Length: 284
Image 1 (cartoon, rainbow, N blue to C red):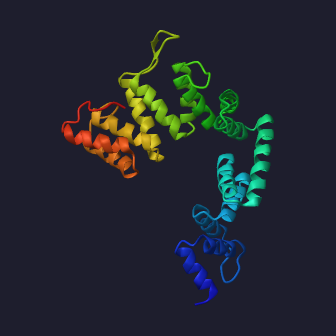
Image 2: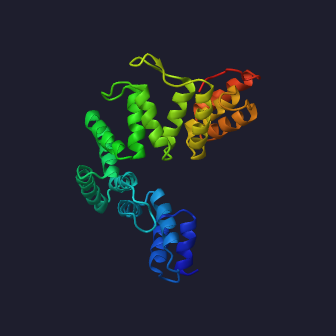
Image 3: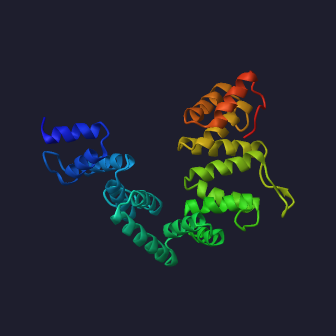
């Protein structure tokens, strides 16, 4: 067996070092491998996910600059640089510090993605007021994750933000229409349950029309694989809220969530079996 065959077999067997070796050959078209960037990145990702620090650093660089077919993403760049740095990769440590400094400068310059990322760093560093300020800047520029974050802060009255359900719905909706699964699910929850606004003395959402819209948002979020939306969608089907009652479909969504290890979904399935009619056994 040639070295090429040995390395390829080892890569297929999950050896991160061999996966890096194969990735490099695909990237530059060496040792009998065709030049194929897509295949190279697939192998680099496998190696990175397998814990190879060099591959993690490389993937971080690709996400930082949006190269080699990877979308530019500050969050993912930080994640991979940080993973590699935690494994002792010196290049990754240097990249991480450079990247974080650069993101702060970009944020100050008005870059929405950098503003959102800077907010995440401040929140992780337990400086919530600074985090909220950067989330707000990102949200105002239309960044969906920034908008979703502001929706959560207004919904729950977190991090010094005064609770205001109308503003929460407003921010969630802006993020939801851009495809943010968390916002879609959270907006659906607010629409479904109905929330009372002390500031305005009236119900902001709720009722059959809102329930029907909630079902649509849960469906969109579930379609993106958001596990909490699976459970909420199941609730719609089982309770007949926003959609025709369909216990079978409700169970299917619960089973999908349970298959991913969600304890609440497993418990809901157990309760559903105890209550064969399934009426009102839990609320979204």
